[in-house]
Image 1 (spheres, one colour):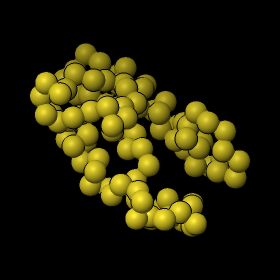
Image 2: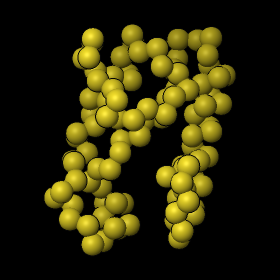
Image 3: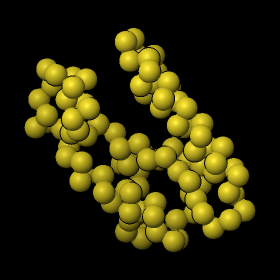
Image 4: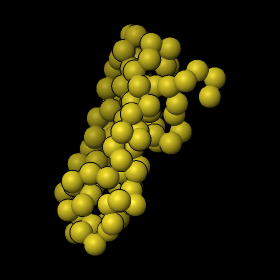
Length: 98
């Protein structure tokens, strides 16, 4: 959302772009510590916000929120060394060597 042009969704898109920059700056500031800051992009999932934004969409065809839980867990593991990244949930796993 932060990198595309979406008419009539300007406040939402601007807030996402600002969040991306905030995470990247903070990641740079904490780079020499053990703390890490990343932004997880869950992709399209079934949420109330999405239902309001796309009222004609069949929510039963979308993945549930818990389908991205593993991605959050993977970024929270102590061995995760990612920092300052925008991470797609589909690209992460909490299981080692996957």
